[in-house]
Image (cartoon, one colour):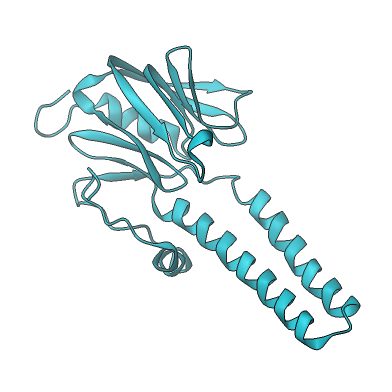
Length: 199
């Protein structure tokens, strides 16, 4: 179970949750911070291209059986694309009284103890659009960069999952730059003292 005590749901459950406008369940004393604004354009383009492909194949392929097979493969690819997008949408970053759980594409990248967070501030960074760990900074952006900077008192390990191990991003850092849809709320939450007196 993840540190935020939420349930990690699979692709099909994620699709159902997303269709209902909900996230995976988290503890009552935790807060969600989404990072989805502007992330739908690329999947939308792939989806449109797949629909066009289905139509073109239907018009050009003379054999019914091949038309059906290729059409089915295109539909499956669209469903897989949408379900992968849904997993990321229903598993946002989560702030608990004890820790900040950071994710990308629905997968936990790191769990930062709140007691190790020295500061959090609004700060726009552009240029990096893919997760990376370099120069003692972990960057979790969207296509517009990042909008929150977090400084830590201890070095923390970050692991960005990938389908192939060689694509995985790993490293340690004492600073984080990330994108969230409501940066003001995240900075305010990280700057406040948890109810148990932590930080």
